[in-house]
Amino acid sequence: MDQSIRSKSVRWLRVVNKTEMLGLRPQGERTCLGFAHLLRTVPSECFPRKYCYSPRFTRCSKRSIRELKNQAPSQNSSSEIAVQVRDVCKTFQDKRKNLLTGRFRAVSVPALRGISLDVNRGEVFGMLGPNSSGKTTLLRCMSTLCKPDKGNVHVLGKHTVHQSAAVRKQIGCVFQDAGLDKILTGREHLELFGGLYHIPRIRCRRRIDELVEMLEMGPYVDRLTGTYSGGIKRRLDLALGLLHEPPVLLLDEPTVGLDLSSRRVIWNTVRRYAEAGNTVVFTSHYLEEVELLADRVAILDDGRCIAIGSPQELKQRIGGRRFTIRIQEFCSEKVAQAALEVLQHEGIVEDARVNAFEFNAIELFVQSELLNRLEIDPRADADSAYNSYTELLRQTLKTNGFELFGITQRGVSLSDVYLALAGRDFREADQAARLSEGSMKRQPKRSAFNAEPQ
Ligand SMILES: Nc1ncnc2c1ncn2[C@@H]1O[C@H](COP(=O)(O)OP(=O)(O)OP(=O)(O)O)[C@@H](O)[C@H]1O
Image (cartoon, rainbow, N blue to C red; front, side, top):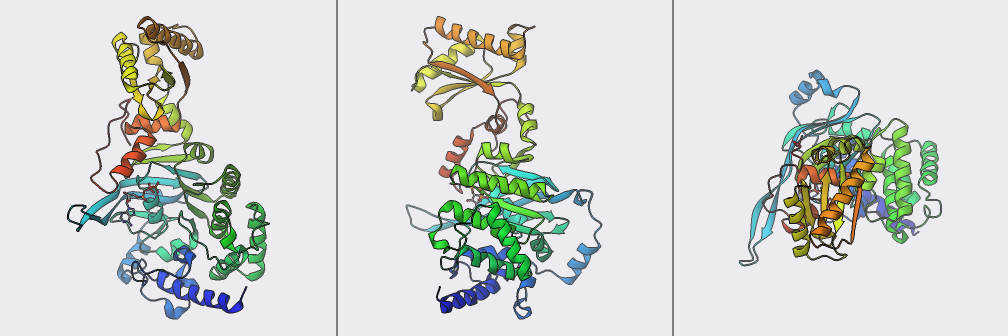
């Protein structure tokens, strides 16, 4: 590559470092380098002394720093807790255009509404939620990039606002919109970051080789990143986040839009990293990814944490089984509603609805209490009891003139947990978020099982 371009790029990088890190870049101004925002989480001590004045998020009075240092560690900031979030609220001020008048008006968009949670050291912690539930904002609060309006976030006992420089030394971040500089190769990116983190050159090279092997990037690392596919770009992003071996790794939707092989590589890398005693916090939209990867998961809805626990615990808390009844392959809503009314009238379903996203299939949650009440094989094991219940459904629908296309049953999934707690399923929530993006949000519904949101 042309050396002059590269040195220009590195010079720009320094300028961008300085302005991004110190929060001096005017809002909305474009940076020359795509990956500039990645650098915001690099500790400010990496920059020449003369640049290090008044960083936006580290600015606080000497007195408040003294107070923080003298503060006795709270009960939960013990060594077992890697990330502590307490009562965090964040509201954005946004502008919306009135389509009639063409004028903009200011609107408040509450992104986080009092979230508290703890992430233990050495665990893989997932944050699951539909669009606009506040996952990214919470992750940005943990990474020092977003300042909560209310509440505190501590990472390894350090306050993310008052001790942001100390926090940045402990974290690695991979965000959704991470950009890479097209005119540098993957290895050059890694070397550049190694330099910023002051990793000795030989150690840095060894670490780069390790990461290249771990992320299966051998054939790509010496190519210009402009030629990378989405999956390889995400792998390089992850390598940049892992380069300095941070004890806490923050990932925002690490596998969104990737094919299965890239996802597998990323999942394996994250797992191995956590097994080495590090903490990983990630957000995801994919239920199966969270079930597979997370030791514990927080389910977010509308800026609130509605459940927290291991995927297994959460599913057990809901219990029972989920039935899907299809009257016809592509059923109309009217027919499905009529069938549901029959079942309700016969008193053999408790918690049921017609799912418009599944061609108006009827979905039921069935728990053992219902089977006991209906006196279905009281002495039989769970499987036979649920099979008898299936037969009862089939007979009831048949005697009322409904020909069945099919009935399936399965154990509950995290999607059912979300449905039970939030009163709507993921796709409905995503659609609602898209429709009401930024407008007044609905109040959370009571759970389908009357489970109290936490
Ligand atoms: N900089 C911002 N300015 C205005 N509103 C914002 C800003 N950042 C986030 N929001 C709003 O805050 C809410 C939560 O957004 P956030 O990105 O945290 O959600 P999310 O759960 O990560 O969603 P997704 O899964 O789509 O990434 C949304 O309504 C979003 O529009």
